[in-house]
Length: 55
Image 1 (spheres, rainbow, N blue to C red):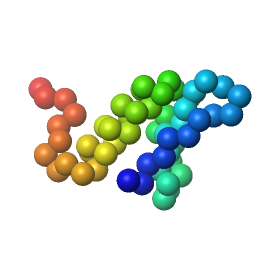
Image 2 (image 1 turned 120 degrees about the horizontal axis):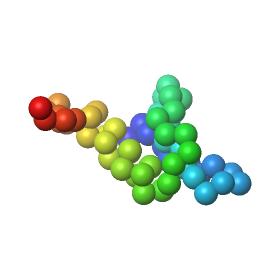
Image 3 (image 1 turned 30 degrees about the vertical axis):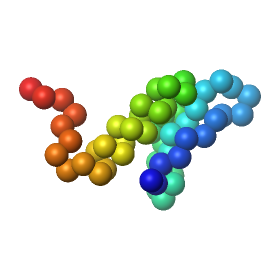
Image 4 (image 1 turned 90 degrees about the horizontal axis):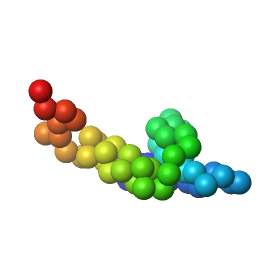
C-alpha cells in the first residue's frame, strides 16, 4: 500500500499521495472522496483486469 491519506493542517480536507514518488493525487478533498480515491488507486495497481469505464 504505497499511498497515504493525510489531513491538511488548519483545513477540513485531506491529501492523497504516493509514498515513494511523492506524487499528489488529491490536493484538498473530503475524507469520503479521499477514501474512494485510495480504493481506485489500489484497484488499478493490484487488479490487472480492472476496467475504468466500459464502452
